[in-house]
Image 1 (cartoon, one colour):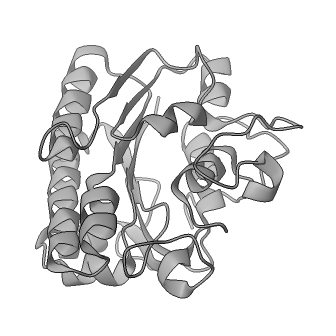
Image 2 (spheres, rainbow, N blue to C red; image 1 turned 120 degrees about the vertical axis):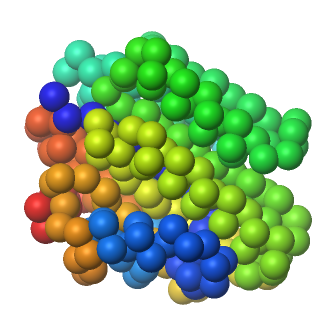
Length: 258
């Protein structure tokens, strides 16, 4: 039975990733199917982007257009709910409380939230907590969300500032730890939700709308650059890896074996 870890690094621009000078990026690109030119959804805001990531529909369909959750008029089953319906065990580790709304109550067997401003390097703390739980319970799907790149890097210091690039590098160090610890047992998917410019995001400008993605695992061709990739493709790809038929409402495509 195949298992997946999805890592979302908030606000990570592709050019920021390339300029952060983290040595692991070369290895990650070499061993993954990847793109530095995937597209997110508009508005390029954290909660709408993650709801689209998990429900494979644009914000105009799920109804949340800001960081305040809106109950959809016509609900679409999300990834967490679909996995639970297929008897998969899911866990979530996150540093921004509003993300609690990307899954419905009862869809997780474990979750932990740490406020990003409670400590320094909360992304690293959440990574350790997630890895400890994987060792303990071996869940089928784990969502690990890192927010310091966005909050402390982008909004506090400015996109493409040295502080922002440092937080990206720290996030990639966490990705390296995940892959080195459980990469033989889990497929690891790394993405951003949106980019950013100056000290904000949310527009349809390329700096906000363009994101990188990496797919590390036996179902993906190492070193292959993917084309025409959308944030809507993430949930269908995970479902395909785990042998689950996606809901017909989902709009994205599977990238498995592409």
